[in-house]
Image (tube, rainbow, N blue to C red; front, side, top):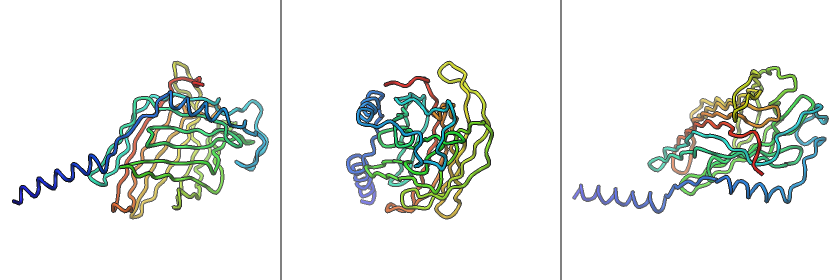
Length: 267
């Protein structure tokens, strides 16, 4: 009877996993990304280079420009996973997209790893180079049909691509990730070159880290290698965090590498 009870419980668990807690994931195809870009472009307004909404600087350096709008393709390896409800792993497709569109003082970039996973950020021009706008960022995840959309708002912008190419010391920010306090630190590292889409491209290496080691920890290392316009030529992230949720304590782990496949966007 005990064995029968165990079998019944296993079958019930399998049915719940399959039908109630379905956790299928879906690739954002290039065609879908292009459709969204074209729809946005037909109604968007060109960015204003003298806007003060992103930084205290109002005059952009001569010849400094942001990424050309369109859809960029990235060769990708990566996964995200949680250990709740028996655990689930989302494997990222071999090719993902970054969509660049006009947004306020500059451009918005959205990386779609999956329909269930994306990141957004906004770049603007300033006197010293290209900045990450302190608002307009977003992190989105979906597991078992439960979505988590976390808007990112920080106390000041971050210089990512300085005109002089010189490294900058680590700079800590005070932010909100959704409604929670969040404290990332950004650092401008060396400028070098790398191969991308069959060409040698000059890149600025910048790194964001989060080191929160309390009971509900969060450890992130994000490396961006940006071209002269602020477009990622390579993105690499590792993240491990523990959160208090309605399912109990849930550990989230993510690792990915995404490398630009073409310097010219699809439009």
